[in-house]
Image 1 (cartoon, rainbow, N blue to C red):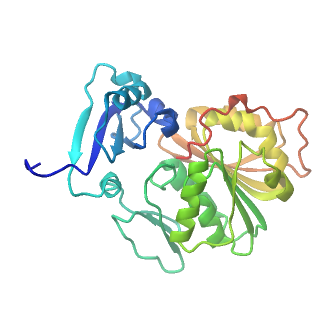
Image 2 (cartoon, rainbow, N blue to C red; image 1 turned 30 degrees about the vertical axis):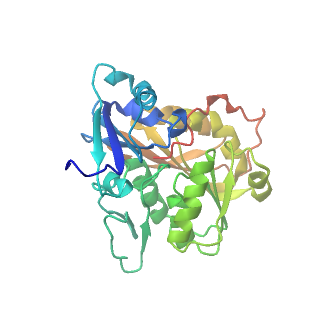
Image 3 (spheres, helix red, strand yellow; image 1 turned 120 degrees about the vertical axis):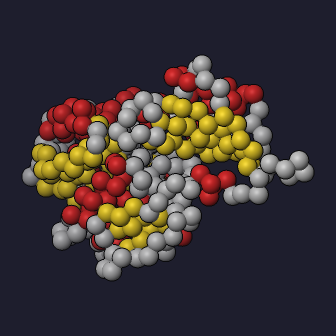
Length: 315
Protein backbone atom coordinates (compact mmCIF):
# COMPACT_ATOMS: atom_id res chain seq x y z
CA UNK A 1 0.00 0.00 0.00
CA UNK A 2 1.46 3.39 -0.96
CA UNK A 3 2.04 5.99 1.72
CA UNK A 4 -0.64 8.32 0.37
CA UNK A 5 -3.32 5.70 -0.31
CA UNK A 6 -6.20 5.56 2.13
CA UNK A 7 -7.64 2.12 2.91
CA UNK A 8 -11.24 1.79 1.78
CA UNK A 9 -11.95 -1.49 3.56
CA UNK A 10 -10.35 -4.04 5.82
CA UNK A 11 -10.05 -7.80 6.07
CA UNK A 12 -9.37 -9.87 9.19
CA UNK A 13 -8.44 -13.54 8.78
CA UNK A 14 -8.29 -16.30 11.39
CA UNK A 15 -8.05 -20.08 11.01
CA UNK A 16 -10.91 -22.15 12.35
CA UNK A 17 -12.36 -25.64 12.38
CA UNK A 18 -15.35 -26.83 10.40
CA UNK A 19 -17.43 -27.08 13.59
CA UNK A 20 -16.64 -23.45 14.40
CA UNK A 21 -17.45 -22.39 10.83
CA UNK A 22 -20.84 -24.11 11.01
CA UNK A 23 -21.69 -22.41 14.29
CA UNK A 24 -20.73 -18.87 13.29
CA UNK A 25 -23.56 -16.35 13.46
CA UNK A 26 -22.84 -12.89 12.01
CA UNK A 27 -25.36 -11.45 14.45
CA UNK A 28 -23.18 -12.55 17.37
CA UNK A 29 -20.78 -9.63 16.90
CA UNK A 30 -21.58 -5.95 17.32
CA UNK A 31 -20.17 -4.92 13.97
CA UNK A 32 -21.16 -4.47 10.34
CA UNK A 33 -18.59 -7.07 9.33
CA UNK A 34 -19.50 -9.56 6.62
CA UNK A 35 -18.23 -13.00 7.65
CA UNK A 36 -17.10 -15.63 5.18
CA UNK A 37 -15.92 -19.14 6.02
CA UNK A 38 -13.88 -21.18 3.57
CA UNK A 39 -12.89 -24.85 3.47
CA UNK A 40 -9.11 -24.68 3.09
CA UNK A 41 -8.63 -28.44 2.54
CA UNK A 42 -11.49 -30.44 1.04
CA UNK A 43 -13.24 -32.66 3.61
CA UNK A 44 -10.73 -31.67 6.32
CA UNK A 45 -12.62 -30.72 9.45
CA UNK A 46 -9.70 -28.87 11.03
CA UNK A 47 -8.55 -26.58 8.21
CA UNK A 48 -11.09 -23.84 7.57
CA UNK A 49 -10.71 -20.07 7.49
CA UNK A 50 -12.76 -17.16 8.78
CA UNK A 51 -12.54 -13.88 6.85
CA UNK A 52 -14.25 -10.77 8.15
CA UNK A 53 -14.67 -7.80 5.78
CA UNK A 54 -15.28 -4.31 7.15
CA UNK A 55 -15.59 -0.86 5.63
CA UNK A 56 -13.54 0.66 8.47
CA UNK A 57 -10.44 -0.21 10.44
CA UNK A 58 -11.31 -2.91 13.00
CA UNK A 59 -11.22 -1.83 16.62
CA UNK A 60 -10.05 -3.96 19.53
CA UNK A 61 -13.60 -4.92 20.50
CA UNK A 62 -14.36 -6.30 17.03
CA UNK A 63 -11.18 -8.38 17.05
CA UNK A 64 -12.05 -9.78 20.49
CA UNK A 65 -15.54 -10.72 19.27
CA UNK A 66 -14.14 -12.40 16.16
CA UNK A 67 -11.66 -14.35 18.26
CA UNK A 68 -14.52 -15.58 20.44
CA UNK A 69 -16.13 -17.16 17.37
CA UNK A 70 -13.07 -19.37 16.73
CA UNK A 71 -11.61 -20.61 20.04
CA UNK A 72 -9.24 -22.98 18.23
CA UNK A 73 -7.27 -19.91 17.07
CA UNK A 74 -6.82 -18.51 20.58
CA UNK A 75 -3.01 -18.52 20.28
CA UNK A 76 -2.88 -17.25 16.70
CA UNK A 77 -2.61 -13.59 15.77
CA UNK A 78 -5.22 -12.50 13.23
CA UNK A 79 -4.04 -11.29 9.86
CA UNK A 80 -5.37 -7.76 9.33
CA UNK A 81 -5.18 -6.30 5.84
CA UNK A 82 -6.08 -2.85 4.54
CA UNK A 83 -7.77 -3.15 1.15
CA UNK A 84 -7.28 -0.12 -1.09
CA UNK A 85 -9.38 0.87 -4.07
CA UNK A 86 -11.12 -2.47 -4.12
CA UNK A 87 -14.65 -3.69 -3.70
CA UNK A 88 -14.37 -5.80 -0.53
CA UNK A 89 -17.39 -7.97 -1.43
CA UNK A 90 -15.88 -8.75 -4.84
CA UNK A 91 -12.57 -9.60 -3.19
CA UNK A 92 -14.32 -11.96 -0.80
CA UNK A 93 -15.73 -13.79 -3.82
CA UNK A 94 -12.51 -13.96 -5.81
CA UNK A 95 -12.19 -17.73 -5.40
CA UNK A 96 -15.85 -18.61 -5.96
CA UNK A 97 -15.82 -20.06 -9.44
CA UNK A 98 -19.22 -20.92 -11.03
CA UNK A 99 -20.69 -24.26 -10.03
CA UNK A 100 -22.77 -26.49 -12.28
CA UNK A 101 -25.40 -28.95 -11.07
CA UNK A 102 -27.70 -30.52 -13.62
CA UNK A 103 -29.39 -27.73 -15.55
CA UNK A 104 -28.25 -25.06 -13.09
CA UNK A 105 -25.23 -22.77 -12.99
CA UNK A 106 -24.57 -20.58 -9.96
CA UNK A 107 -22.09 -17.71 -10.24
CA UNK A 108 -21.02 -14.50 -8.54
CA UNK A 109 -20.55 -11.06 -10.06
CA UNK A 110 -16.81 -11.69 -10.08
CA UNK A 111 -17.25 -14.81 -12.22
CA UNK A 112 -20.08 -14.43 -14.78
CA UNK A 113 -21.34 -17.60 -16.46
CA UNK A 114 -23.45 -18.34 -19.49
CA UNK A 115 -26.87 -19.94 -19.16
CA UNK A 116 -26.69 -23.60 -20.19
CA UNK A 117 -29.05 -24.76 -22.96
CA UNK A 118 -32.42 -25.54 -21.41
CA UNK A 119 -31.14 -24.53 -17.99
CA UNK A 120 -30.81 -21.51 -15.77
CA UNK A 121 -27.92 -19.44 -14.43
CA UNK A 122 -28.33 -17.73 -11.07
CA UNK A 123 -26.33 -14.74 -9.84
CA UNK A 124 -25.78 -15.25 -6.10
CA UNK A 125 -23.18 -12.98 -4.52
CA UNK A 126 -21.67 -13.83 -1.15
CA UNK A 127 -22.76 -11.64 1.72
CA UNK A 128 -24.59 -11.73 5.05
CA UNK A 129 -26.42 -14.98 4.32
CA UNK A 130 -25.40 -18.52 3.56
CA UNK A 131 -26.23 -20.54 0.48
CA UNK A 132 -24.16 -19.41 -2.50
CA UNK A 133 -24.23 -22.94 -3.90
CA UNK A 134 -20.51 -23.47 -3.34
CA UNK A 135 -20.97 -25.75 -0.33
CA UNK A 136 -21.65 -29.46 -0.91
CA UNK A 137 -24.98 -29.27 0.92
CA UNK A 138 -26.44 -26.56 -1.31
CA UNK A 139 -25.07 -27.99 -4.55
CA UNK A 140 -26.37 -31.40 -3.48
CA UNK A 141 -29.83 -29.93 -2.96
CA UNK A 142 -29.70 -28.44 -6.46
CA UNK A 143 -28.91 -31.90 -7.80
CA UNK A 144 -31.81 -33.41 -5.83
CA UNK A 145 -34.24 -30.83 -7.20
CA UNK A 146 -32.93 -31.32 -10.72
CA UNK A 147 -33.58 -35.07 -10.37
CA UNK A 148 -37.22 -34.31 -9.46
CA UNK A 149 -37.81 -32.14 -12.55
CA UNK A 150 -40.16 -34.64 -14.20
CA UNK A 151 -42.51 -34.61 -11.21
CA UNK A 152 -45.22 -32.00 -10.62
CA UNK A 153 -45.45 -29.91 -7.45
CA UNK A 154 -48.06 -27.31 -6.61
CA UNK A 155 -46.94 -26.07 -3.17
CA UNK A 156 -43.26 -25.80 -2.28
CA UNK A 157 -41.57 -24.49 0.87
CA UNK A 158 -37.86 -23.78 1.42
CA UNK A 159 -37.13 -23.64 5.16
CA UNK A 160 -33.99 -21.75 6.19
CA UNK A 161 -33.49 -20.31 2.73
CA UNK A 162 -30.26 -18.33 3.26
CA UNK A 163 -29.87 -16.63 -0.12
CA UNK A 164 -33.05 -17.98 -1.76
CA UNK A 165 -31.13 -20.13 -4.25
CA UNK A 166 -33.07 -23.36 -3.74
CA UNK A 167 -36.41 -21.56 -3.94
CA UNK A 168 -35.27 -19.95 -7.20
CA UNK A 169 -34.35 -23.36 -8.60
CA UNK A 170 -37.79 -24.66 -7.64
CA UNK A 171 -39.42 -21.69 -9.34
CA UNK A 172 -37.53 -22.49 -12.53
CA UNK A 173 -38.45 -26.19 -12.45
CA UNK A 174 -42.10 -25.70 -11.46
CA UNK A 175 -43.18 -22.23 -12.62
CA UNK A 176 -46.85 -22.90 -11.84
CA UNK A 177 -46.18 -23.86 -8.21
CA UNK A 178 -46.80 -21.62 -5.22
CA UNK A 179 -43.43 -21.23 -3.52
CA UNK A 180 -42.76 -19.98 0.00
CA UNK A 181 -39.29 -19.34 1.35
CA UNK A 182 -38.55 -18.76 5.03
CA UNK A 183 -35.70 -17.98 7.39
CA UNK A 184 -35.39 -17.20 11.08
CA UNK A 185 -32.96 -14.36 10.21
CA UNK A 186 -34.60 -11.23 8.73
CA UNK A 187 -31.31 -10.39 6.98
CA UNK A 188 -31.53 -13.62 5.00
CA UNK A 189 -35.02 -12.68 3.84
CA UNK A 190 -33.73 -9.24 2.77
CA UNK A 191 -30.88 -10.93 0.86
CA UNK A 192 -33.35 -13.34 -0.77
CA UNK A 193 -35.53 -10.42 -1.86
CA UNK A 194 -32.49 -8.68 -3.41
CA UNK A 195 -31.37 -11.88 -5.13
CA UNK A 196 -34.85 -12.48 -6.50
CA UNK A 197 -34.81 -9.03 -8.07
CA UNK A 198 -31.31 -9.57 -9.48
CA UNK A 199 -32.43 -12.83 -11.08
CA UNK A 200 -35.86 -11.64 -12.24
CA UNK A 201 -37.61 -14.15 -9.95
CA UNK A 202 -41.19 -13.18 -9.16
CA UNK A 203 -44.06 -14.58 -7.16
CA UNK A 204 -42.14 -16.17 -4.27
CA UNK A 205 -43.58 -15.51 -0.81
CA UNK A 206 -40.94 -14.54 1.78
CA UNK A 207 -41.57 -15.15 5.47
CA UNK A 208 -39.47 -14.56 8.59
CA UNK A 209 -40.23 -17.60 10.73
CA UNK A 210 -38.84 -19.78 13.50
CA UNK A 211 -39.12 -23.22 11.94
CA UNK A 212 -42.68 -23.62 10.75
CA UNK A 213 -44.00 -21.29 13.44
CA UNK A 214 -45.66 -18.58 11.37
CA UNK A 215 -49.35 -18.28 10.52
CA UNK A 216 -48.55 -17.85 6.82
CA UNK A 217 -46.80 -21.22 6.73
CA UNK A 218 -49.66 -23.07 8.37
CA UNK A 219 -52.23 -21.35 6.19
CA UNK A 220 -50.51 -22.57 3.01
CA UNK A 221 -49.95 -26.15 4.24
CA UNK A 222 -49.76 -28.91 3.23
CA UNK A 223 -46.77 -28.76 0.89
CA UNK A 224 -45.98 -31.46 -1.64
CA UNK A 225 -42.27 -30.48 -1.70
CA UNK A 226 -40.41 -29.44 1.45
CA UNK A 227 -36.76 -28.32 1.32
CA UNK A 228 -34.75 -27.81 4.51
CA UNK A 229 -31.01 -27.18 4.16
CA UNK A 230 -30.25 -26.42 7.78
CA UNK A 231 -28.17 -28.46 10.28
CA UNK A 232 -28.60 -31.94 11.75
CA UNK A 233 -29.61 -30.90 15.29
CA UNK A 234 -32.39 -28.54 14.22
CA UNK A 235 -33.59 -31.03 11.60
CA UNK A 236 -34.01 -33.67 14.31
CA UNK A 237 -35.87 -31.33 16.66
CA UNK A 238 -38.04 -29.98 13.80
CA UNK A 239 -38.91 -33.38 12.29
CA UNK A 240 -42.46 -33.51 13.71
CA UNK A 241 -43.37 -30.01 12.56
CA UNK A 242 -41.80 -30.48 9.12
CA UNK A 243 -43.69 -33.76 8.71
CA UNK A 244 -46.88 -32.01 9.86
CA UNK A 245 -46.79 -29.45 7.03
CA UNK A 246 -46.01 -32.11 4.39
CA UNK A 247 -48.81 -33.42 2.21
CA UNK A 248 -49.35 -37.20 2.04
CA UNK A 249 -46.55 -38.74 -0.06
CA UNK A 250 -44.78 -35.37 -0.28
CA UNK A 251 -41.09 -35.22 -1.20
CA UNK A 252 -38.81 -33.90 1.54
CA UNK A 253 -35.23 -32.80 0.78
CA UNK A 254 -32.98 -32.45 3.83
CA UNK A 255 -29.38 -31.19 3.99
CA UNK A 256 -26.80 -29.57 6.26
CA UNK A 257 -25.92 -32.87 7.91
CA UNK A 258 -22.78 -34.95 7.96
CA UNK A 259 -22.87 -38.58 6.83
CA UNK A 260 -22.17 -39.52 10.46
CA UNK A 261 -25.37 -37.73 11.47
CA UNK A 262 -27.53 -39.33 8.79
CA UNK A 263 -29.05 -42.09 10.92
CA UNK A 264 -30.28 -39.76 13.66
CA UNK A 265 -31.98 -37.50 11.10
CA UNK A 266 -33.50 -40.44 9.22
CA UNK A 267 -34.72 -41.99 12.49
CA UNK A 268 -36.33 -38.72 13.62
CA UNK A 269 -38.29 -38.46 10.38
CA UNK A 270 -39.11 -42.18 10.30
CA UNK A 271 -40.82 -41.67 13.67
CA UNK A 272 -43.08 -39.19 11.85
CA UNK A 273 -43.93 -41.61 9.03
CA UNK A 274 -41.32 -40.39 6.49
CA UNK A 275 -39.24 -42.94 4.57
CA UNK A 276 -35.74 -42.44 3.16
CA UNK A 277 -35.63 -42.72 -0.65
CA UNK A 278 -32.12 -41.76 -1.67
CA UNK A 279 -28.89 -40.21 -0.41
CA UNK A 280 -26.47 -37.96 -2.27
CA UNK A 281 -23.20 -38.19 -0.37
CA UNK A 282 -20.57 -35.51 -1.05
CA UNK A 283 -17.44 -36.06 0.99
CA UNK A 284 -18.52 -36.05 4.62
CA UNK A 285 -21.83 -34.34 3.82
CA UNK A 286 -25.09 -36.03 2.85
CA UNK A 287 -28.28 -34.78 1.21
CA UNK A 288 -31.39 -36.87 1.85
CA UNK A 289 -34.63 -37.27 -0.07
CA UNK A 290 -37.54 -38.73 1.84
CA UNK A 291 -41.20 -39.41 1.13
CA UNK A 292 -43.88 -38.48 3.65
CA UNK A 293 -46.40 -41.08 4.78
CA UNK A 294 -49.56 -41.79 2.83
CA UNK A 295 -51.63 -40.04 5.49
CA UNK A 296 -50.83 -36.60 6.86
CA UNK A 297 -48.82 -36.67 10.07
CA UNK A 298 -50.36 -35.16 13.20
CA UNK A 299 -47.83 -34.24 15.94
CA UNK A 300 -48.54 -35.44 19.47
CA UNK A 301 -46.96 -32.34 21.03
CA UNK A 302 -46.51 -28.67 20.05
CA UNK A 303 -43.25 -27.67 18.31
CA UNK A 304 -40.23 -27.29 20.58
CA UNK A 305 -37.92 -24.45 19.45
CA UNK A 306 -35.22 -25.23 22.05
CA UNK A 307 -33.13 -27.46 19.78
CA UNK A 308 -32.90 -25.04 16.87
CA UNK A 309 -29.73 -23.09 17.62
CA UNK A 310 -28.08 -22.24 14.33
CA UNK A 311 -30.87 -23.61 12.15
CA UNK A 312 -30.76 -20.60 9.83
CA UNK A 313 -27.17 -21.26 8.79
CA UNK A 314 -28.02 -22.49 5.34
CA UNK A 315 -24.79 -23.69 3.72
